[in-house]
Length: 145
Image 1 (spheres, rainbow, N blue to C red):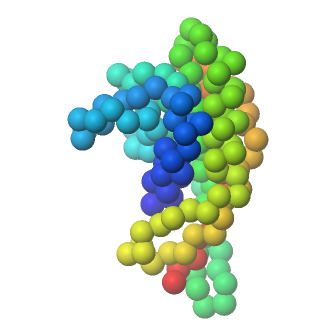
Image 2 (tube, one colour):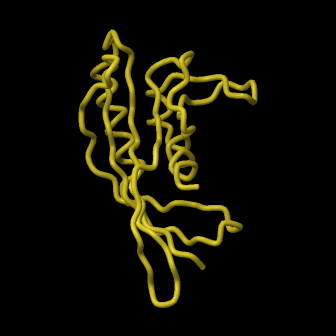
């Protein structure tokens, strides 16, 4: 539920989308390469792309409502040849701007009210296969209604 809400914020940002490759999802339409599936980035994906993953949660409540604090990692991967390294950093900052202090929209049928999210500044890294990356940790809370 929350990775999809983060996905919606990212693809709504023209600056983020301009820095990403596209991917042909199951709909048959090219869309910005932003992935939320548990398996990671598909082998046939082009770079730069984003992978959103929920990495932790804790209990949170308010009076009689239950909820949780949730941590997500939003990772921007660039091509292994580092051909767009400067652009990758600019796109990482655009990701941070799109998410920091943003309001999440959740489907009303989920019966959760989201609070705003806080994004940390992008942190440069690389994955085990040598792809350059920027990780933007995001923290938010949801409250059952």
